[in-house]
Length: 331
Image (cartoon, rainbow, N blue to C red; front, side):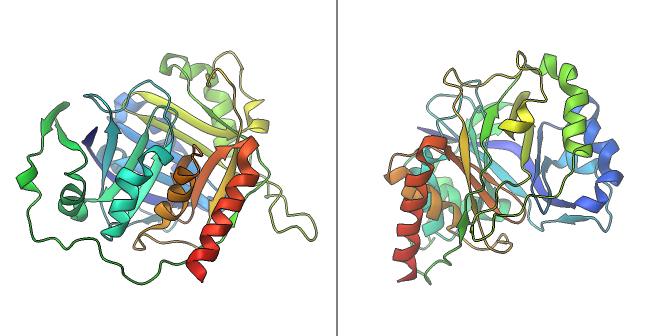
């Protein structure tokens, strides 16, 4: 297996909903005119709280500072696991659970905080630039590690992961975060970038104008009936979209591509309050048990909360698995 450290240096930002009007112009540029901005890593995720942006340095230049824009302090590097030379491919991702044991859990054990961005094509692991030496040291035994330079993979020699780093330590017990499962049914989709103009007006409407208050949970029900959630990424020329099944009906069905099974997904939303960026092991707490139960999942981190997408027909089993995990951690 190969681990690629991609060239992108990514900033993570939160755009408050009341400030969306101020950023519509640069966001449309990043969405539809990437050659003008020269941005190669762009992700926009709408949640009930805000919009999370993950953008490379070129994309970051397009976003003027304002009271509505909150920027995480760290610069993040992007890792990608593949079984062959090259980074993101046009093959649908197998899911974050496939890299739980080999990447996510070891990094958590070495106190490395990660963000995850699953797309239709692949899974990206974001680590803080300052943690890269620990990442290389931790994963060098398991992976052939390459660093992308000018679009070409350059091997990272094992000795570059210098000795002297502490082995995995058992620190304080990780915080047990509550999980919720809204009733939305989600689709994970892609489309040919050449056809993006054909859905432009619908995409603009969904992202910037179709705002409605989230439906409240039914009386006595612990779960929200549905939440606003829409994720769009344009990374190295590949497009990935996550939307609920009701929103999908607004788009022309012949342009959006999904797996042949047309599988629908349910969401597990992690965190009762904003998670922050310093805590380690949040992704591992979710991806680890799902991997052990052989449950595939997509995982999308945002500025405040984390979100796992699991097959619709397995949501009951997923909640049971995660509840058992929570009980074990809490005991």
